[in-house]
Figure 1 (cartoon, one colour):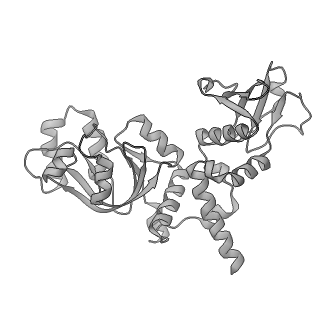
Figure 2 (cartoon, rainbow, N blue to C red; figure 1 turned 120 degrees about the vertical axis):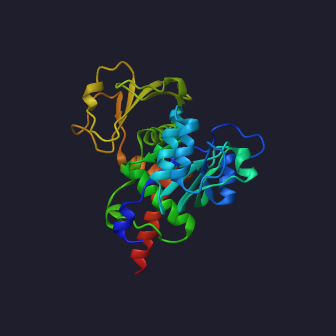
Figure 3 (cartoon, one colour; figure 1 turned 180 degrees about the vertical axis):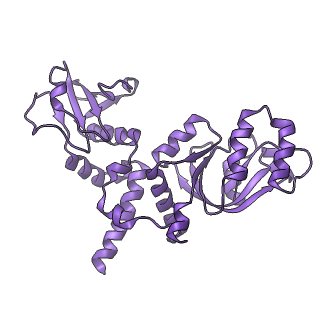
Length: 308
């Protein structure tokens, strides 16, 4: 696939779990059949997607879910697009669309409510996925186009690794020069910092997860009982002096750095980027899917560069 073609590849996530199927998990069914599929059956068997659309309007025109899901599935998805699925057990699947829409009226498809199908080369990924993909499935949208750059890169790298071939090109020069922080979502970065602090003896208090600007979550030291607040800035610099009057210990982290040269209030701890990176590398098994996928690719490319 040429670079110009690859630029036009879309990333989708499809929630094939419109209801809990007692006999078969719909995502696992798709995996076994090599398809991605949706519901909303119609009487008869339409031969084209245009025919299905006209038949569907007479039945589902007032169903906004049908409109929002079938419009992209029938008319916007195309061959070589990538798609993510998720089963009831929490495992993710990643696949490449390999065919046009078709209507499957066989009993096993109708029993699961999945007559609208596309051929798809699917791989089982496991319990991890890019942060925005995981978030998307929590939103409950049945068909969603993913537009953010990190998810595109990680999805391509993941499919190439699973397929055992460099099917999707990536901007290698850029990726070799960048670091993983630019690919982590806000929630993934929060998870990584929380794991780092747990290694330092702090336990995270789940109920403290906050959308307030002053902090992201609270931690408590398992031995001393010391309470501390954590403030993370994924893209902007932080000013430790802003927290000098805060009545509790504060951990700050910003991949972009901090204002000033340090030496501020003793209870304000600006975590160092290099320390977090060392922790990432030493405990890769704990890191988010995005991190492990990116670093695995980067290590392989650097090893090839050294040997050549």
